[in-house]
Image (cartoon, rainbow, N blue to C red; front, side, top):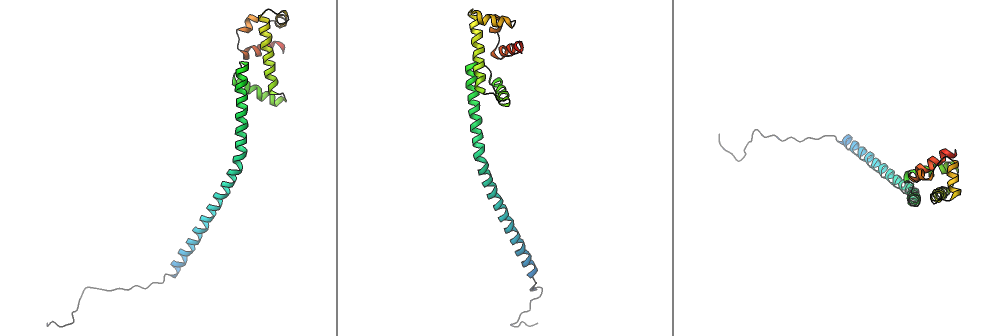
Length: 157
């Protein structure tokens, strides 16, 4: 064979593919629109939750301040009366339920402790009042304020 200016190549193929991709494109655009709408819904929900959180934050901060104030009041009263914070918290609850001012409890405990102190100093009125309840000042002085209160309440009631 004689070589000419035209060479024939065998074994190579050229394929050109034409496809109708209009359904695919429409499907992708539809999916894109749905994802965009979903993203907008999530964004809107987030904004509503943020507004709700802000609306709830103000009352919660107020409640936290009130609880902090109550806790501080109970802690200070505990130092003044010698009663435990737990006991005072329970008594505060009972006072609230019965319509009693919590501060009046402190006055009552102070009077109780003053009467025990007066009886210990030998004041006959205080000693006689304890004796009428079947109690001796020496026994009361060894008890915690909570136990003193419970014992006196049991004897009175």
